[in-house]
Length: 283
Image (cartoon, rainbow, N blue to C red; front, side, top):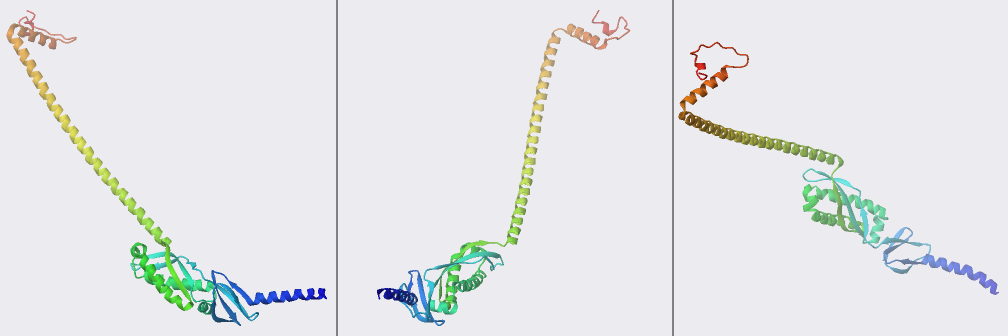
């Protein structure tokens, strides 16, 4: 008898465990849940704790209660000054109304797709009203705050609240980057050519100034040399004149010898008469 009871007890426990599994469900601290009956959600949203539902008729759908991250793919936008930029943005969002979220979005994947469209359209609209400088630096925070507010208002009907939208990185399209790089290189080459020209001009000025200074120095030196030579020649002439004036006969004798020395070179033949002036020094 006891064996029969043991045999019957095991299936009963299994049935009770199955009923408990189908009846009770637990919602974690990071979750919120809806009970779905025959494909339609009940109006109640279940928070953290242990809850009960009808077995086999109702099932539970869980949603995140925490803030979720959405990382958008890079996309192009046009500024008010007609500059194309590539924006890489992200958003943080939360399921505020699970009931409305389930009825409109069903899954987080669908919500991500909807967020992509809404946030991108808002970013394009806001960036189109600002210049590139304002988007990158001056008005970036105010633009993102406005985008967050407008996008959150649009997503409210889907039970979603957008906490924050931010731009991670702002780039230029590849073709623009190449064009800017070419312009930068051309500008650097132009500056290099200008610097070389200015350097050559300055070098020419320095060389001209040096040549002028050299010519002035040589001219002044030549002038001083001529003056010194003239003074030396004058002093020598004065000394000679003073010396010769003391002995005119010696002066005449010296002049005669000098004339003979200049006249009588190597292999020179001369025919002189006894009264020739050249023979007077010898006489």
